[in-house]
Length: 477
Ligand code: C5P
Image (cartoon, rainbow, N blue to C red):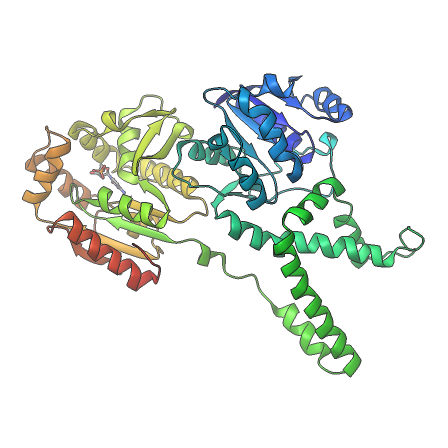
Protein backbone atom coordinates (compact mmCIF):
# COMPACT_ATOMS: atom_id res chain seq x y z
CA UNK A 1 0.00 0.00 0.00
CA UNK A 2 2.92 2.36 0.77
CA UNK A 3 6.49 1.94 -0.34
CA UNK A 4 8.03 3.57 2.73
CA UNK A 5 6.53 4.54 6.09
CA UNK A 6 8.22 6.85 8.59
CA UNK A 7 7.29 6.51 12.26
CA UNK A 8 8.22 9.34 14.60
CA UNK A 9 8.01 8.18 18.22
CA UNK A 10 8.65 4.49 18.79
CA UNK A 11 6.73 3.98 22.02
CA UNK A 12 3.91 1.53 22.58
CA UNK A 13 1.64 2.89 19.82
CA UNK A 14 4.33 3.73 17.25
CA UNK A 15 6.09 0.41 17.91
CA UNK A 16 2.86 -1.62 17.72
CA UNK A 17 1.94 0.07 14.47
CA UNK A 18 5.37 -0.80 13.09
CA UNK A 19 4.80 -4.45 14.04
CA UNK A 20 1.40 -4.50 12.35
CA UNK A 21 2.61 -2.68 9.23
CA UNK A 22 5.25 -5.34 8.86
CA UNK A 23 3.04 -8.32 9.56
CA UNK A 24 0.35 -7.16 7.11
CA UNK A 25 2.92 -6.19 4.45
CA UNK A 26 1.57 -2.62 4.31
CA UNK A 27 4.94 -1.07 3.46
CA UNK A 28 8.15 -2.26 1.84
CA UNK A 29 10.27 -0.33 4.31
CA UNK A 30 9.72 1.17 7.77
CA UNK A 31 12.05 3.87 8.99
CA UNK A 32 11.88 5.48 12.41
CA UNK A 33 12.93 8.38 14.60
CA UNK A 34 12.82 8.82 18.36
CA UNK A 35 14.60 11.52 20.34
CA UNK A 36 15.26 8.87 22.96
CA UNK A 37 18.32 6.96 21.67
CA UNK A 38 17.49 3.86 23.73
CA UNK A 39 14.03 3.60 22.20
CA UNK A 40 15.45 3.96 18.72
CA UNK A 41 18.06 1.26 19.33
CA UNK A 42 15.53 -1.11 20.87
CA UNK A 43 13.10 -0.59 17.97
CA UNK A 44 15.83 -1.43 15.50
CA UNK A 45 17.03 -4.43 17.52
CA UNK A 46 13.49 -5.79 17.77
CA UNK A 47 13.14 -5.45 13.99
CA UNK A 48 10.24 -2.98 14.35
CA UNK A 49 12.00 -0.55 12.01
CA UNK A 50 14.41 -1.28 9.17
CA UNK A 51 16.64 1.68 9.97
CA UNK A 52 16.71 4.97 11.87
CA UNK A 53 16.19 8.21 10.00
CA UNK A 54 16.40 11.93 10.61
CA UNK A 55 13.18 13.96 10.55
CA UNK A 56 14.29 15.67 7.33
CA UNK A 57 15.08 12.41 5.51
CA UNK A 58 11.93 10.64 6.65
CA UNK A 59 9.64 13.49 5.61
CA UNK A 60 9.52 12.40 1.97
CA UNK A 61 7.83 9.06 2.80
CA UNK A 62 4.28 8.47 1.59
CA UNK A 63 3.03 7.97 5.14
CA UNK A 64 4.44 9.66 8.21
CA UNK A 65 3.07 8.62 11.59
CA UNK A 66 3.57 11.04 14.47
CA UNK A 67 3.24 8.92 17.56
CA UNK A 68 4.63 11.40 20.07
CA UNK A 69 3.06 13.15 23.08
CA UNK A 70 0.41 15.73 22.15
CA UNK A 71 2.62 18.79 22.82
CA UNK A 72 5.25 17.41 20.43
CA UNK A 73 2.94 16.83 17.45
CA UNK A 74 2.83 20.46 16.15
CA UNK A 75 6.60 21.13 16.57
CA UNK A 76 7.49 17.86 14.83
CA UNK A 77 5.01 18.71 12.04
CA UNK A 78 6.70 22.08 11.66
CA UNK A 79 10.11 20.41 11.33
CA UNK A 80 9.04 17.92 8.65
CA UNK A 81 6.57 20.13 6.74
CA UNK A 82 9.08 21.83 4.36
CA UNK A 83 10.44 18.44 3.28
CA UNK A 84 7.20 16.51 2.71
CA UNK A 85 7.08 14.50 -0.51
CA UNK A 86 4.48 15.14 -3.23
CA UNK A 87 2.35 12.24 -2.00
CA UNK A 88 3.13 12.42 1.73
CA UNK A 89 0.25 12.04 4.18
CA UNK A 90 0.89 12.75 7.86
CA UNK A 91 -1.17 11.19 10.65
CA UNK A 92 -0.90 11.42 14.41
CA UNK A 93 -2.12 9.09 17.14
CA UNK A 94 -2.76 11.64 19.88
CA UNK A 95 -5.65 11.63 22.35
CA UNK A 96 -6.39 15.36 21.96
CA UNK A 97 -7.49 16.67 18.59
CA UNK A 98 -8.74 20.28 18.82
CA UNK A 99 -5.45 21.75 20.07
CA UNK A 100 -3.31 19.76 17.62
CA UNK A 101 -5.45 20.64 14.59
CA UNK A 102 -5.48 24.33 15.54
CA UNK A 103 -1.70 24.46 15.80
CA UNK A 104 -1.09 22.52 12.60
CA UNK A 105 -3.48 24.71 10.59
CA UNK A 106 -0.89 27.49 10.82
CA UNK A 107 1.95 25.32 9.54
CA UNK A 108 2.97 24.94 5.89
CA UNK A 109 1.43 21.90 4.12
CA UNK A 110 -1.16 21.54 6.87
CA UNK A 111 -3.58 19.99 4.34
CA UNK A 112 -1.49 16.81 4.41
CA UNK A 113 -2.55 16.14 7.99
CA UNK A 114 -5.17 13.49 8.79
CA UNK A 115 -5.81 13.54 12.57
CA UNK A 116 -6.29 10.06 14.04
CA UNK A 117 -6.80 8.64 17.50
CA UNK A 118 -6.54 4.88 17.94
CA UNK A 119 -8.41 3.84 21.09
CA UNK A 120 -5.86 1.26 22.04
CA UNK A 121 -3.00 0.99 24.46
CA UNK A 122 -1.77 -0.54 27.66
CA UNK A 123 -0.18 1.01 30.72
CA UNK A 124 3.24 -0.11 29.42
CA UNK A 125 5.38 2.12 27.32
CA UNK A 126 8.42 2.05 25.08
CA UNK A 127 9.10 -0.08 21.99
CA UNK A 128 9.65 -3.22 24.11
CA UNK A 129 5.95 -3.03 25.03
CA UNK A 130 4.93 -2.99 21.33
CA UNK A 131 2.26 -5.57 20.59
CA UNK A 132 1.31 -7.00 17.24
CA UNK A 133 -2.48 -6.94 16.79
CA UNK A 134 -2.92 -4.12 19.34
CA UNK A 135 -5.44 -2.36 17.06
CA UNK A 136 -7.47 -5.42 16.08
CA UNK A 137 -11.15 -4.78 16.76
CA UNK A 138 -10.37 -1.38 18.32
CA UNK A 139 -11.90 1.90 17.22
CA UNK A 140 -9.81 4.53 15.50
CA UNK A 141 -11.32 7.98 15.41
CA UNK A 142 -10.53 10.14 12.40
CA UNK A 143 -11.48 13.76 12.90
CA UNK A 144 -11.56 15.02 9.34
CA UNK A 145 -13.93 15.05 6.41
CA UNK A 146 -14.24 11.47 5.27
CA UNK A 147 -14.65 12.34 1.59
CA UNK A 148 -11.09 13.44 1.05
CA UNK A 149 -8.89 11.03 -0.92
CA UNK A 150 -6.06 10.95 1.66
CA UNK A 151 -8.59 10.36 4.43
CA UNK A 152 -10.00 7.38 2.57
CA UNK A 153 -6.49 5.99 2.17
CA UNK A 154 -5.80 6.41 5.89
CA UNK A 155 -9.14 4.79 6.79
CA UNK A 156 -8.10 1.84 4.65
CA UNK A 157 -4.72 1.72 6.38
CA UNK A 158 -6.39 1.44 9.80
CA UNK A 159 -8.79 -1.22 8.52
CA UNK A 160 -5.82 -3.23 7.29
CA UNK A 161 -4.44 -3.41 10.85
CA UNK A 162 -7.87 -4.64 11.96
CA UNK A 163 -9.30 -1.42 13.41
CA UNK A 164 -12.85 -0.04 13.01
CA UNK A 165 -12.79 3.47 11.64
CA UNK A 166 -15.14 6.06 13.14
CA UNK A 167 -15.40 9.61 11.83
CA UNK A 168 -16.07 12.36 14.33
CA UNK A 169 -15.84 16.09 14.72
CA UNK A 170 -12.68 17.10 16.66
CA UNK A 171 -14.53 19.09 19.36
CA UNK A 172 -16.96 16.25 19.94
CA UNK A 173 -14.02 13.87 20.16
CA UNK A 174 -12.28 15.95 22.83
CA UNK A 175 -15.48 16.29 24.82
CA UNK A 176 -16.22 12.56 24.74
CA UNK A 177 -12.69 11.41 25.52
CA UNK A 178 -12.36 13.85 28.41
CA UNK A 179 -15.09 11.79 30.07
CA UNK A 180 -14.35 8.23 28.98
CA UNK A 181 -10.57 8.26 29.03
CA UNK A 182 -8.95 11.40 30.41
CA UNK A 183 -11.08 11.58 33.59
CA UNK A 184 -10.39 7.93 34.58
CA UNK A 185 -6.65 8.60 34.26
CA UNK A 186 -7.02 11.83 36.26
CA UNK A 187 -8.89 9.89 38.96
CA UNK A 188 -6.33 7.06 38.99
CA UNK A 189 -3.36 9.42 39.37
CA UNK A 190 -5.05 11.48 42.10
CA UNK A 191 -6.48 8.46 43.93
CA UNK A 192 -3.13 6.67 44.05
CA UNK A 193 -1.51 9.95 45.19
CA UNK A 194 -3.99 10.14 48.07
CA UNK A 195 -2.95 6.73 49.45
CA UNK A 196 0.83 7.12 49.16
CA UNK A 197 2.74 6.75 52.41
CA UNK A 198 5.99 8.71 52.35
CA UNK A 199 5.84 8.64 48.58
CA UNK A 200 5.36 4.85 48.42
CA UNK A 201 2.42 2.57 47.85
CA UNK A 202 0.89 1.27 51.07
CA UNK A 203 1.13 -2.36 52.13
CA UNK A 204 -1.71 -4.83 51.53
CA UNK A 205 -2.76 -3.49 48.13
CA UNK A 206 -6.05 -5.18 47.22
CA UNK A 207 -7.43 -5.80 43.75
CA UNK A 208 -9.35 -2.51 43.77
CA UNK A 209 -6.33 -0.31 44.36
CA UNK A 210 -4.24 -2.45 42.04
CA UNK A 211 -6.59 -1.50 39.17
CA UNK A 212 -5.88 2.16 39.86
CA UNK A 213 -2.11 1.72 40.23
CA UNK A 214 -2.11 -0.06 36.87
CA UNK A 215 -3.75 2.93 35.16
CA UNK A 216 -1.54 5.36 37.10
CA UNK A 217 1.53 3.53 35.76
CA UNK A 218 0.83 5.05 32.30
CA UNK A 219 3.36 7.38 30.69
CA UNK A 220 3.56 10.70 32.64
CA UNK A 221 4.84 12.58 29.57
CA UNK A 222 1.87 11.45 27.51
CA UNK A 223 -0.78 12.03 30.16
CA UNK A 224 0.42 15.40 31.41
CA UNK A 225 0.10 16.68 27.84
CA UNK A 226 -3.40 15.21 27.48
CA UNK A 227 -4.54 16.85 30.72
CA UNK A 228 -3.11 20.23 29.74
CA UNK A 229 -4.22 20.32 26.12
CA UNK A 230 -7.74 19.09 26.81
CA UNK A 231 -7.97 21.26 29.90
CA UNK A 232 -11.43 22.76 29.45
CA UNK A 233 -13.20 19.49 28.67
CA UNK A 234 -11.30 17.65 31.38
CA UNK A 235 -12.10 20.29 34.01
CA UNK A 236 -15.77 20.06 33.09
CA UNK A 237 -15.66 16.27 33.58
CA UNK A 238 -13.74 16.69 36.85
CA UNK A 239 -16.45 19.11 38.03
CA UNK A 240 -19.10 16.44 37.44
CA UNK A 241 -16.93 13.92 39.23
CA UNK A 242 -16.57 16.25 42.23
CA UNK A 243 -20.31 16.55 42.42
CA UNK A 244 -20.66 12.73 42.42
CA UNK A 245 -18.05 12.49 45.18
CA UNK A 246 -19.97 15.06 47.20
CA UNK A 247 -23.31 13.28 46.71
CA UNK A 248 -21.91 9.90 47.77
CA UNK A 249 -20.11 11.51 50.71
CA UNK A 250 -23.35 13.17 51.85
CA UNK A 251 -25.26 9.86 51.60
CA UNK A 252 -22.64 8.28 53.85
CA UNK A 253 -22.76 11.17 56.33
CA UNK A 254 -26.56 11.02 56.42
CA UNK A 255 -26.51 7.20 56.59
CA UNK A 256 -29.14 7.26 53.91
CA UNK A 257 -29.27 6.56 50.16
CA UNK A 258 -25.91 4.80 49.89
CA UNK A 259 -27.39 1.56 48.50
CA UNK A 260 -29.56 3.53 46.08
CA UNK A 261 -26.50 5.41 44.81
CA UNK A 262 -24.44 2.24 44.37
CA UNK A 263 -27.29 0.26 42.80
CA UNK A 264 -27.97 2.96 40.23
CA UNK A 265 -24.33 2.84 39.17
CA UNK A 266 -24.22 -0.96 39.23
CA UNK A 267 -27.25 -1.19 36.96
CA UNK A 268 -26.02 1.36 34.42
CA UNK A 269 -25.62 -0.17 30.97
CA UNK A 270 -23.61 0.85 27.99
CA UNK A 271 -25.71 3.08 25.74
CA UNK A 272 -26.69 1.11 22.65
CA UNK A 273 -23.96 1.38 20.04
CA UNK A 274 -26.49 1.07 17.30
CA UNK A 275 -27.72 4.58 17.99
CA UNK A 276 -24.46 5.91 16.69
CA UNK A 277 -24.66 4.17 13.32
CA UNK A 278 -27.29 5.00 10.72
CA UNK A 279 -27.72 2.89 7.60
CA UNK A 280 -29.82 4.12 4.68
CA UNK A 281 -30.61 1.56 1.96
CA UNK A 282 -31.53 2.75 -1.53
CA UNK A 283 -32.83 0.08 -3.89
CA UNK A 284 -34.56 -0.03 -7.25
CA UNK A 285 -34.19 -1.22 -10.86
CA UNK A 286 -31.53 -0.13 -13.36
CA UNK A 287 -31.33 3.49 -14.41
CA UNK A 288 -33.78 4.75 -11.81
CA UNK A 289 -31.40 7.36 -10.38
CA UNK A 290 -30.22 5.46 -7.30
CA UNK A 291 -26.65 6.71 -7.55
CA UNK A 292 -27.50 10.42 -7.78
CA UNK A 293 -29.95 10.20 -4.90
CA UNK A 294 -27.78 7.97 -2.70
CA UNK A 295 -24.72 10.16 -3.29
CA UNK A 296 -26.74 13.28 -2.54
CA UNK A 297 -27.81 11.81 0.82
CA UNK A 298 -24.30 10.59 1.67
CA UNK A 299 -22.81 13.99 0.92
CA UNK A 300 -25.48 15.94 2.80
CA UNK A 301 -25.22 13.77 5.90
CA UNK A 302 -21.48 13.18 5.57
CA UNK A 303 -22.08 9.43 5.49
CA UNK A 304 -20.03 6.81 3.75
CA UNK A 305 -21.33 5.72 0.33
CA UNK A 306 -21.41 2.20 -1.09
CA UNK A 307 -22.64 1.30 -4.55
CA UNK A 308 -23.11 -2.47 -4.36
CA UNK A 309 -23.76 -2.66 -8.12
CA UNK A 310 -20.34 -1.14 -8.76
CA UNK A 311 -18.79 -3.91 -6.66
CA UNK A 312 -20.57 -6.60 -8.71
CA UNK A 313 -19.40 -4.86 -11.87
CA UNK A 314 -15.80 -4.69 -10.60
CA UNK A 315 -15.87 -8.35 -9.62
CA UNK A 316 -17.12 -9.23 -13.11
CA UNK A 317 -14.52 -7.26 -15.08
CA UNK A 318 -11.32 -7.38 -13.02
CA UNK A 319 -8.94 -10.29 -13.48
CA UNK A 320 -7.38 -11.70 -10.32
CA UNK A 321 -9.66 -9.52 -8.24
CA UNK A 322 -8.19 -8.47 -4.89
CA UNK A 323 -10.86 -6.90 -2.67
CA UNK A 324 -8.31 -5.12 -0.45
CA UNK A 325 -7.49 -2.90 -3.44
CA UNK A 326 -11.05 -1.61 -3.78
CA UNK A 327 -12.26 1.65 -2.28
CA UNK A 328 -14.89 4.32 -2.84
CA UNK A 329 -13.35 7.76 -2.97
CA UNK A 330 -15.24 11.06 -3.01
CA UNK A 331 -13.94 13.59 -5.46
CA UNK A 332 -15.68 16.94 -5.89
CA UNK A 333 -18.87 15.54 -4.44
CA UNK A 334 -18.88 12.48 -6.73
CA UNK A 335 -18.05 9.01 -5.43
CA UNK A 336 -15.77 6.92 -7.61
CA UNK A 337 -14.85 3.28 -7.33
CA UNK A 338 -11.07 2.92 -7.38
CA UNK A 339 -8.99 -0.21 -7.70
CA UNK A 340 -5.40 -0.14 -6.58
CA UNK A 341 -5.65 3.65 -6.40
CA UNK A 342 -6.96 4.12 -9.99
CA UNK A 343 -10.43 5.26 -10.94
CA UNK A 344 -12.22 2.32 -12.64
CA UNK A 345 -15.57 4.02 -13.30
CA UNK A 346 -15.06 4.05 -17.10
CA UNK A 347 -14.22 0.37 -17.13
CA UNK A 348 -17.24 -0.74 -15.10
CA UNK A 349 -19.94 1.61 -16.47
CA UNK A 350 -20.74 -0.19 -19.70
CA UNK A 351 -23.82 -2.27 -20.45
CA UNK A 352 -21.48 -5.19 -21.13
CA UNK A 353 -20.02 -4.93 -17.59
CA UNK A 354 -23.55 -4.60 -16.20
CA UNK A 355 -24.71 -7.75 -17.97
CA UNK A 356 -21.63 -9.64 -16.73
CA UNK A 357 -22.34 -8.35 -13.21
CA UNK A 358 -25.95 -9.48 -13.43
CA UNK A 359 -24.79 -12.93 -14.44
CA UNK A 360 -22.36 -13.46 -11.55
CA UNK A 361 -24.81 -11.82 -9.12
CA UNK A 362 -26.96 -14.98 -9.31
CA UNK A 363 -24.34 -17.03 -7.48
CA UNK A 364 -24.63 -17.22 -3.72
CA UNK A 365 -20.83 -17.25 -3.25
CA UNK A 366 -20.50 -14.00 -5.20
CA UNK A 367 -23.28 -12.37 -3.21
CA UNK A 368 -21.67 -13.39 0.09
CA UNK A 369 -18.34 -12.06 -1.11
CA UNK A 370 -19.79 -8.67 -2.11
CA UNK A 371 -21.77 -8.42 1.14
CA UNK A 372 -18.63 -9.11 3.17
CA UNK A 373 -16.72 -6.43 1.26
CA UNK A 374 -19.56 -4.02 2.07
CA UNK A 375 -19.60 -4.91 5.79
CA UNK A 376 -15.89 -4.39 6.09
CA UNK A 377 -16.02 -1.09 4.16
CA UNK A 378 -18.86 0.23 6.32
CA UNK A 379 -17.50 -0.98 9.68
CA UNK A 380 -19.27 1.00 12.38
CA UNK A 381 -19.80 4.05 10.21
CA UNK A 382 -23.06 5.49 9.04
CA UNK A 383 -23.55 4.76 5.38
CA UNK A 384 -25.84 5.02 2.38
CA UNK A 385 -25.85 1.70 0.55
CA UNK A 386 -27.46 1.36 -2.86
CA UNK A 387 -28.27 -1.67 -4.96
CA UNK A 388 -30.99 -4.22 -5.50
CA UNK A 389 -30.99 -5.93 -2.10
CA UNK A 390 -29.51 -3.26 0.19
CA UNK A 391 -32.68 -3.11 2.29
CA UNK A 392 -33.74 -6.76 1.96
CA UNK A 393 -30.51 -8.76 2.32
CA UNK A 394 -27.44 -6.59 2.96
CA UNK A 395 -28.91 -4.41 5.70
CA UNK A 396 -32.36 -5.84 6.51
CA UNK A 397 -32.37 -3.68 9.66
CA UNK A 398 -31.45 -0.45 7.88
CA UNK A 399 -32.77 2.67 9.62
CA UNK A 400 -34.34 3.93 6.41
CA UNK A 401 -35.15 2.01 3.23
CA UNK A 402 -36.00 3.79 0.01
CA UNK A 403 -37.23 1.98 -3.06
CA UNK A 404 -36.98 4.10 -6.20
CA UNK A 405 -38.93 3.31 -9.32
CA UNK A 406 -39.80 4.91 -12.68
CA UNK A 407 -41.21 3.73 -16.05
CA UNK A 408 -38.82 1.73 -18.23
CA UNK A 409 -38.78 4.27 -21.13
CA UNK A 410 -37.63 7.00 -18.83
CA UNK A 411 -35.02 4.83 -17.16
CA UNK A 412 -33.66 3.71 -20.53
CA UNK A 413 -33.37 7.35 -21.63
CA UNK A 414 -31.43 8.22 -18.47
CA UNK A 415 -29.14 5.21 -18.71
CA UNK A 416 -28.38 5.92 -22.37
CA UNK A 417 -26.89 9.26 -21.40
CA UNK A 418 -24.10 7.40 -19.54
CA UNK A 419 -23.82 4.36 -21.70
CA UNK A 420 -24.66 4.82 -25.36
CA UNK A 421 -24.84 1.05 -25.88
CA UNK A 422 -27.65 0.64 -23.36
CA UNK A 423 -31.12 0.03 -24.78
CA UNK A 424 -34.50 -0.33 -23.13
CA UNK A 425 -34.45 -3.98 -24.13
CA UNK A 426 -31.13 -4.62 -22.41
CA UNK A 427 -32.17 -2.81 -19.26
CA UNK A 428 -35.46 -4.64 -19.20
CA UNK A 429 -33.71 -8.00 -19.60
CA UNK A 430 -31.38 -7.18 -16.73
CA UNK A 431 -34.29 -6.08 -14.51
CA UNK A 432 -36.09 -9.33 -15.28
CA UNK A 433 -33.01 -11.35 -14.39
CA UNK A 434 -32.54 -9.37 -11.15
CA UNK A 435 -36.19 -9.82 -10.19
CA UNK A 436 -36.41 -13.50 -10.93
CA UNK A 437 -33.20 -14.89 -9.46
CA UNK A 438 -33.49 -17.27 -6.51
CA UNK A 439 -31.18 -15.44 -4.10
CA UNK A 440 -31.81 -11.85 -3.00
CA UNK A 441 -34.00 -10.88 -5.97
CA UNK A 442 -34.78 -7.25 -6.66
CA UNK A 443 -37.86 -6.31 -4.69
CA UNK A 444 -38.95 -3.59 -2.33
CA UNK A 445 -38.56 -4.47 1.36
CA UNK A 446 -41.95 -4.56 3.08
CA UNK A 447 -40.90 -1.58 5.20
CA UNK A 448 -39.36 0.41 2.33
CA UNK A 449 -40.64 3.84 1.34
CA UNK A 450 -41.56 3.77 -2.33
CA UNK A 451 -40.60 6.84 -4.38
CA UNK A 452 -41.34 7.49 -8.03
CA UNK A 453 -38.37 9.25 -9.62
CA UNK A 454 -40.11 10.28 -12.86
CA UNK A 455 -40.11 13.89 -11.69
CA UNK A 456 -37.13 16.20 -12.09
CA UNK A 457 -33.98 15.57 -10.03
CA UNK A 458 -34.66 18.63 -7.82
CA UNK A 459 -38.18 17.47 -7.04
CA UNK A 460 -37.01 13.98 -6.17
CA UNK A 461 -34.27 15.40 -3.95
CA UNK A 462 -36.85 17.53 -2.11
CA UNK A 463 -39.01 14.43 -1.53
CA UNK A 464 -36.04 12.42 -0.27
CA UNK A 465 -34.85 15.19 2.06
CA UNK A 466 -38.30 15.49 3.55
CA UNK A 467 -38.48 11.70 4.09
CA UNK A 468 -35.12 11.78 5.90
CA UNK A 469 -36.18 14.71 8.09
CA UNK A 470 -39.44 13.03 9.01
CA UNK A 471 -38.37 9.42 9.39
CA UNK A 472 -34.89 9.74 10.82
CA UNK A 473 -35.47 13.07 12.57
CA UNK A 474 -32.14 14.36 11.34
CA UNK A 475 -31.67 17.62 9.54
CA UNK A 476 -30.78 17.66 5.87
CA UNK A 477 -30.30 20.81 3.77
O1 C5P B 1 -26.67 -1.05 -10.02
P1 C5P B 1 -25.92 -1.54 -11.21
O2 C5P B 1 -26.63 -1.37 -12.50
O3 C5P B 1 -24.53 -1.01 -11.24
O4 C5P B 1 -25.74 -3.12 -10.95
C1 C5P B 1 -25.26 -4.01 -11.94
C2 C5P B 1 -25.86 -5.38 -11.71
O5 C5P B 1 -25.34 -5.95 -10.49
C3 C5P B 1 -27.37 -5.40 -11.52
O6 C5P B 1 -28.09 -5.50 -12.71
C4 C5P B 1 -27.61 -6.63 -10.67
O7 C5P B 1 -27.72 -7.79 -11.44
C5 C5P B 1 -26.35 -6.74 -9.85
N1 C5P B 1 -26.59 -6.25 -8.50
C6 C5P B 1 -27.15 -7.11 -7.58
N2 C5P B 1 -27.35 -6.71 -6.30
C7 C5P B 1 -27.03 -5.48 -5.90
C8 C5P B 1 -26.51 -4.55 -6.83
C9 C5P B 1 -26.31 -4.97 -8.13
O8 C5P B 1 -27.46 -8.24 -7.92
N3 C5P B 1 -27.20 -5.12 -4.62
